[in-house]
Amino acid sequence: MKITLKRTEEQVELVKAMASRNREVAYEAQQALAEFIGPVLAEVVNQAPTLSNLFTNFQFNEMDSPSIPLDLYYDITAPDYVKVYSTTVPGGLPTNTVTPTSQEMKFSTYRLDTAVDFDKRYAAKSRMDVVGKTFTRIAQEILLRQEATSANLILGALKEAKTNGKDHLLSRTAGKTLNLADFNEILTLAKRINTAWTGSAPEGGRIKGITDLIMSPEQVEGLRSLAYQPVHTGAKTDIPATDSMREAIYNNAGIPEFYGISIMEINELGENNATGSAGNGNQKFTKVFDTLVGSDEDIRDLIIGLDRSRESLFRAVAVDSETGTELNLVADDQYSVRQSKIGYYGSMEEGRMILDDRVLTGLKFVKS
Image 1: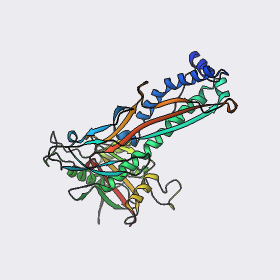
Image 2: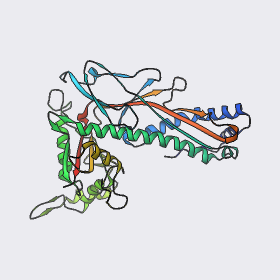
Image 3: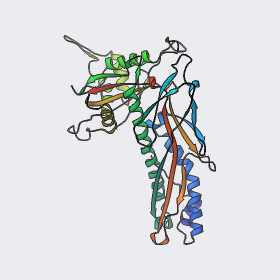
Image 4: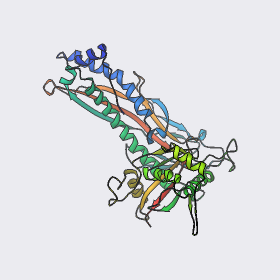
């Protein structure tokens, strides 16, 4: 992620005006840049390929109280009460609420904010790179808070998810990587969970189940290895992949998708082991999931399956009544003349919710 300000004559003059000794001129220039760059930062954050953008957005006016009519998002044979997952503070663990399907479900929103500053002399010298880096930092800090909140909500819902008494998580021994049999089994599990409201195949007759798999670099390595490793190891013989399959995997080394399933590779999943190899121990999201599970199991890695064809993951975000942007960016006026600083304060109000945990499946790797 990188915000770059073009060195045009108008922008150079605007940045220089931010360092003016006239307070009114300086503040007006700072605020003008904030109003210009705020919508750009919001767009950058919303397009980043992260867990937070797996959620479906809907906007509400900042003075409103957002809600969802649950009866429109559940089929007619759904139970009278459903379990809805949400979080009330940024980065907090999720809570689940048993709610009647006929009820209007209120979103719990929270504020994500950040504040940055830089020395006035950089503005006076029209250092566009410094100003650009300042706004990049604002977007990064908002994005990190969104990512932590989204991950905790998804992991908490996955840990609790059950359908007709069936756990949404498969289990394998730690130290192994995803193989073709595991991949096949997790797809079948998701299809059994994701049925139509009649209990039969969904509309169109095709059971989708999983559209995306989120996994660690080590698990993606396991998929790449199918180009040269056996796809099945038996007692007497190893079964290799077909030549056409090996060639397809080899030519698609980046693995953006596998068997029609999109693959999302993130560093926060992976080995949860403090004594692991350098750079491969105590990965953040795996460690969070291990803490959620508790002392019953020792979770070493995790693969998350997600069905994005169903509307379940939602993000409500407030829009500014004046600018219409999601990120409210203003000039920070806390600095005095003696400090020679220019500051910006950015905030965003949002709330996240999972209405149907059947969209989540997974494969956990536990210590034997």
